[in-house]
Length: 227
Image (cartoon, rainbow, N blue to C red; front, side, top):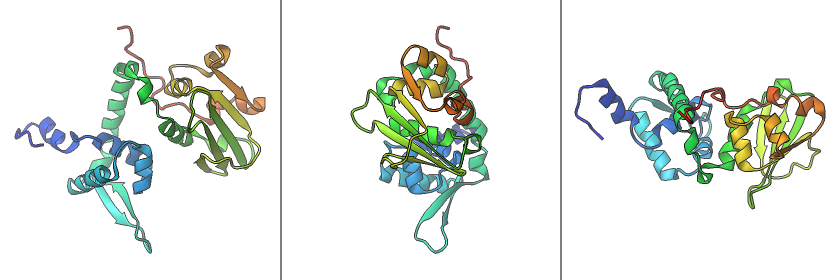
């Protein structure tokens, strides 16, 4: 869309105002570079729309497409102009945490997105041993109700298939509770005390969960609820 105004806000909006743009930039900033990685973080976007938006962002100079040597696969990387949007994305996220977090409905509770965020929130160097298996059992879901995080060395992998190994830590929790914990709206202690979360495993891991698995970087952002 062209606004035909010389105002820098209008010119920026011509580039950034299309649907999905900010979320695509968010995923690129968080380390997603391949098409399937971007789709994973943007579950409801169609491949056609994602392809079109990536092409447009490339034409606008925010994204560069690079072919992986020896493969027919491409990666997408932010240019300097794209990386310069990081403080904009952070400011938008902070505004959302303050003013829009109370608008979260059940339809917004996406278990696949939550598990992607939890995978990114693990700090392998703060765990004990070379391998740790963390299981999430979502008590309110009929499908996609059991997930595993497999931590080996410094790598973290999220899995829907039982790895067939002994679980070190297990979360028995409903989806909304786990989302609220990650968002910083509910503490682990309060969730356990009220029975919304059952945490199983050796105390050396369950008592230090906030150390080896962080919440959202904006979890401490104040909410405007009640203002």
